[in-house]
Amino acid sequence: MTNEQRIVTCIARVTATCSILGSSVIIYMIVSDRKKKLNQPCHRLLLLMSIFDVLQSTAIAVANAAFPKESDIYINEVTSSYGAKGNTQTCAIQGFCLMLGLAVPLYNSCLNIYYVLTIRYSMSSERFAK
Image (cartoon, rainbow, N blue to C red; front, side, top):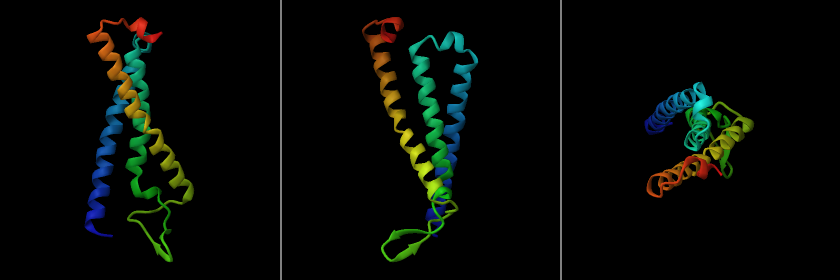
């Protein structure tokens, strides 16, 4: 357990917590006025992107704590990762949440396409939603 491992883990937890807070505020802002905002495709895309970001950021914030205490990473050598307190189930759940986080760039791409179509090509939100 080197200081570098501890610093990297700490930085990952801090940045993931900031991301959780930011995405949670976005979710709150959209859901609090859902009758008006959920009618627009950009808000629906942003809501789903924020939900998946919260899941991924939570998995990152948990960091090494979800890893099994003793894992056979190397052949014939039992190693332990810094801060590992979990088991195989917590590791699998963390991996699942990290994979769900791959949806974030996809929703971001959809938002980019939406804005290109509405700004550059003057497409209406209703037409985009169809």
